Image 1: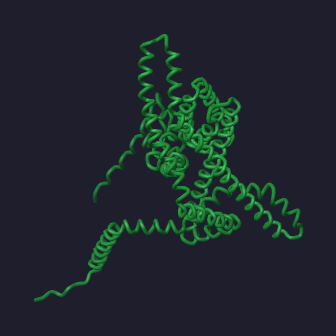
Image 2 (image 1 turned 180 degrees about the vertical axis):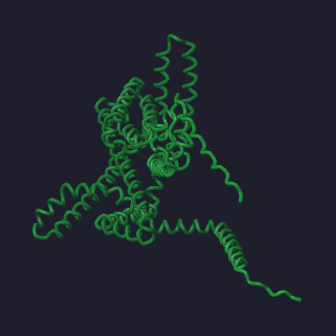
Length: 435
């Protein structure tokens, strides 16, 4: 006799689960198979939208300057000019702040392109052309310095001779042709130059529109955020975004201003004492100073080598000056501008720079610290919340002299302190006689 099939919901659940797993596997395989095409499509989309990316970056960098100008100068001026029309006064203050900020940005770009870059190229070309003379003079100076110690003199002369030939070959075969090809590509690559100008012009227009309607864009982002997530999740995301923005903006703007001041001081002092290649050396020191921790060392070594090739005595003066300048920057200029923007100790700063450099080279060294600060703060908050839920102390100082935490009382036991005796277990109630 045939048994009648009994329907059970668990078979439906198993079937749906199997279908979802198979479909997800097929989708995952398809994505992996089409990954190169997806990457090309994303790259194409980013290339098309690159003017808007430029605009977002420019507006993000110019927003603090625009707010400062509006609050300090143009908003009060607009209120005076349009006493009876407050809306017109606000529009005037915002428009003038955006205009002046963009003009300052263009002035800095113009100074970099027309004033600094040509001189940098001439300095590098002069170093390459006169490298043989510089190395010969340096060798003669070393021989005069070590003439009383012939053994050391012979060794140093041999080392400098081989180094001289290697540096000369590298400069003539690598650096100078690269500079020539770079300039030829820059002048002949009309398409690349025009595309860069197009991105810059459209980016400036986009940034002007964003800065002029900054509050509207912020309101739209908040509206979208609260429409997608719950209020609690949206608040946490908003706080995280605000903290990330504060960390990045404070670090980047502070570092740029600090490096500009250091580079300017270096150029003024080098020009006063007639240091060779003062502009080139100052640009190297200023640019590398953007990199935390390792920046001063990275900038000082090539700059000292350049000056050493021309005048060894001035190289010694330059090294002493750089040491003094970095002490002034680290103890006076930097803290005044940056403050305590990182909030983490030097070990984690060094760790983030090395990790960022290994993953993303220069940009990793530059942005590794603020990225790590955000990740570090997020992990610290998660750890604190977990400890709070477990009714444990959350501050770091509470764990400095800690030996262990009593699992019963949850009290901290310090080194040298005796643990509290465990509470006696409650006696079991006497058994009732069975009826």
